[in-house]
Image (cartoon, rainbow, N blue to C red; front, side, top):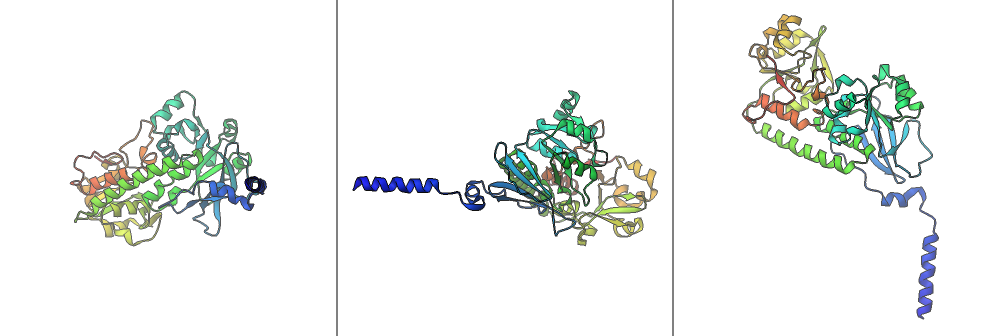
Length: 381
């Protein structure tokens, strides 16, 4: 009897071992790690398909189609065969990357992946000290922007990935780069309408380095600190009125009510006349309308490229009529600027929205953080 039982067990084992794998990669998928969870970002998503990690970048200009899709394949693993037109296969973890926006430098810095950078759009716009040290050693090459991309240099560099900002129309130079076999990652964080949503694109960058757990931990810490800052601001009864932006040519570009800047102002507990609008970007407004609606605003932030109060008058003497100007309550994002003009607000600021919010709360409600020294913002003299 024991011999019969043993023979039956061996037979069952052989049948199981020789059974074909489940169709459509179901067995591989069941053993794969769960997709990365997103809390705020709306313009990209993760999923597991046939054992592969898939990243879908949504198209905010045409919601009927995806902007791009990335199939991440661990180095050495077999690659999928059937791909759609806008799909790219990327072997991970990547060992080299070229970035075309300083915001992507901030993501690399947060993930401790600066050593992977081999090229960047315009080198003197980089604030990061360790990367500037590598630039001096000739380890990072200037490649130009999308409009003036040095294709030959990029092909010589052969980076495992090029990351650029996605726009409504993909530039022909980027399409040419794709045809050369270099995958291009389109980062559209700038179209997100909240600080935490933009910061969560850290997980997009992390996926290519297989640093998902690290990015998740970092983002959770950022989120917690941001919420704590917001709660402290909302506990204040008084809401100072805020004016933002400045005139460009004949139009004042005012942050829309559904924009990244407006969300920061809401979370800093301020009064902003244009909160009621639903525009994600800037609203073109006449100078006369701004004077009519916000002449008496308490505080003025982000006034274009001005670094001194005198700079206002040199462009338009009507700026002197605003209360915020008269009382010297004008602040701009020039707290961390290098000798070459590189501004760290656009590098590490966007990945540290809790620190930007802390600056704004210090400006709007100075009693809440009496010992805080402004980091990204600076009061204009």
